[in-house]
Image: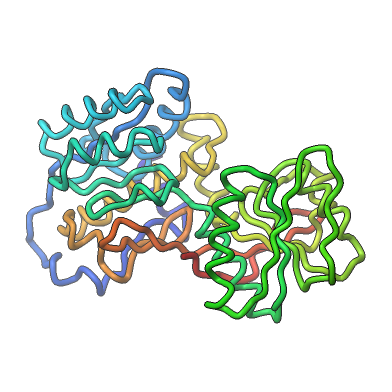
Length: 344
């Protein structure tokens, strides 16, 4: 399947608003043929994921323009890969994958080439290095904004002690004054009963995943309290869907992702995850900019942004990425998109 066929398959595929870049794409202008560099762990413990991401990137961008470099999944390997990439004069660097690798790449590149890193550690962002991974703060912001439009004013958040929940808790706390909610955070430990929440809130936010989320969901059945979640809580097992029935979750649009997964499987086999989809989206950004002859910093931070499998994104000059997410309602038959909400 070629790229044009794939993009026809994805109705919400990667397209940049034409008005935003039309001034750079007049008829007859020569296409920018500079390569993009993929910095991924092609060896080491995460090699399978790295290879899957490379395959996804090649679905969105012409292989002739994509150069792959192996980071091995280490900071030292990432610095070495970045140095090798710079010698090929790329227009854009996609990667690395892990938080430990990002500073090494950033210091090696030193703002000479825009870097779109796949980490979700927003602390690592800086001008010229964008954090493209989906963060807990982004999906927490999106679900709470949506809940507030539906009348939710008081929220209890259950923190299972994971780094994801810790980041979600910080994001939720920052939003109290911004959107007008009251937040209480309950710390829970594996194998222990849920602590008493006090007065019943309008909603309970479960940003984590796993059996703890499902246990809390079952405990809320019939209480009249709305259950809120993030993409971490998505679970398609029949028993899980029964427990989550009626929950609102913020995540990439499941329809767009399903189309991507189908196209990926047809080309490569296997079942791609959200991180693999990030590589498809990032390479699609590069392809869109190349088609518009805007494969540069100014094109990347265009205010109108890009649409991808993981949702609409906008690149800010400080290295942060704004994302919009689908709001889905869980039922025994799966998840249905009901709205779009802005992440942080």
